[in-house]
Image 1 (cartoon, rainbow, N blue to C red):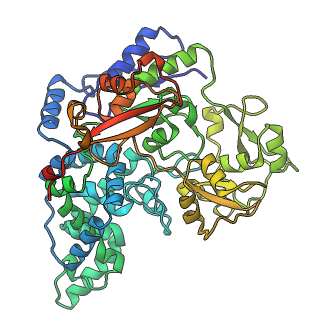
Image 2: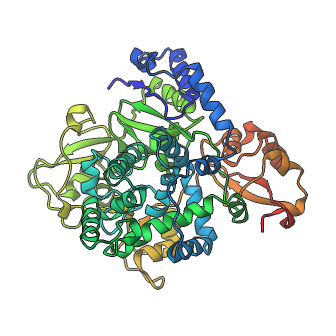
Image 3: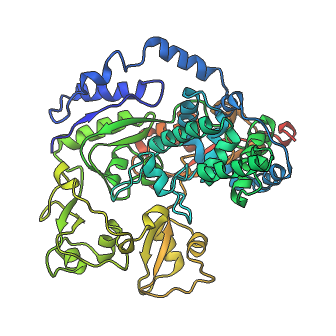
Amino acid sequence: MTARIHFARPFSRRPVATAIFLALLWLSGCTTLESPPEETLSAETAPTDSDASNAADSDAAHADIFQRMREGFSMPDIDDDLVLRHQEIYLGHPGSFRLMVARSRPYLYHIVEEIEKRGMPTELALLPMVESAYDPMAYSRSKASGLWQFIPSTGRYHKLEQNWWLDERRDILASTSAALTYFEALYERHGDWHLALASYNWGGGAVGKAIAKNQDQGLPTDYRSLSSMPEETRNYVPKLQALKNIFRDPELLDALEILQIPNAPYFDTIDFAPSIDVKLAASLAELSEQEFFALNPAHNRPVIVSKSPILLPEGQVGVFAKNIREHIEKKKPLSSWQLTTLRAGETLDDVARRFDMTLIDLTRANDIGKNFTPRPGLSLLVRGNKGGEPLTDETLSRSLQFPESERDSGFVTGRYYTIRKGDTLPLIARRTGVSVKEIRRQNKLRGDLIIAGKRLVIPRPTVSYGIPSRRPAPASVASSAPASTQRTMNYTIRPGDTLTSIARQYRVAVDDLMRWNRVSPTKLRPGMILRIVFARMPRAQRAP
């Protein structure tokens, strides 16, 4: 399959990364990579110099994304005991609160941008904290999924694709656009943001009936007067108000040691035509699979199918372009997966052996549950590039969706591990990168006793996005701060890491990294441990 790459307009307002990517592809002279179509860079879509200037002025006017959000808060405030209760809950768990804010970092700038474009209150950017704690893999008992927690039917109504390959309820761009469009419709219906929020949580029809009931009884119809609301909806707006109260107070955020999130784009988006393995895409972008998946969480399978957009951190697009050019020039495949058709009388064990896979790998790759019944003619995703069919537009058009009763929805919340003879919880934890405590919690285990053959739910490892839990000072301050006010951490170098990428993640200077560790850029090796120093304010300088 001929590789074809082109770029949509980046969701960043500064097209620097995409320009670098295009230049690299142009200079490569690689015949398998086509130049982007002319319309991609047409005057109608390409940002002008004045657009870039205005964007830079706007970004420079705000110290961080929270300051920008505060200036856009415009919903009426409410002040009652429920708000106070939720505020106390958030403030009473500062560690969890810091983690939630850290998780929001890759997404928050984009969401605020989209909200401002529509002229909507910026409080809405805090709503994923209420809905999902800013975890794109969050999944509820009502089958709501993603940052904005769309249930399947509402997601389909808002044209969020949900199929065997991907679930756009978890897609950062698609779900945010759908959620904001939904809020616009709800606000237009009620003319009140609190009622729009209640409708998002409870349903527009339910809120409409509650309003009509109050009208019939001559009662007020504002949010707090709807006595028939369920408990969850009654707490919904107070939770958002509690968050709003916290984020509007910079001194309180500083006292909580909440990480400052820059008022700058975190990612760019590219349209990538060929199918590509998730693991390979992450490697070519020089990211860990967890970091890559944090920006591309919609994919259900280990391969990203043709024509799916890919999000990459700013600065990694050029790296991806260079590495994929070299990969294609060496005639290496972009995907190690193919499709095969289940033959009459063939079992899953037969398929696994035919393609040199384990049964566990086969069932995991195809999201097959215990109730699955093999049927001749069904397509399965298998490893390798021989004996099956390549992932072309024609083969991808076939439906691989199994009936609900025959599959697990485990890809939404985690993955599975079948216990082998001799396994222990610490051993499984090391293999999967998840703590013993979290495995116990997910599987409701009271002790360490496990039984061979049983299956454990293994949650996806929490992604830190390279953010320390406490706010680091600029490198110049960290370099000169007294030892008593410094905080250090150790970082284990991973394949693909560079001093520049590590410095960018932790907002320190490359020169400082070299000085602290007496290491040069050419001597980095996976497994080496680097010392990183952050300045910590003396207690007397902190907000009370």
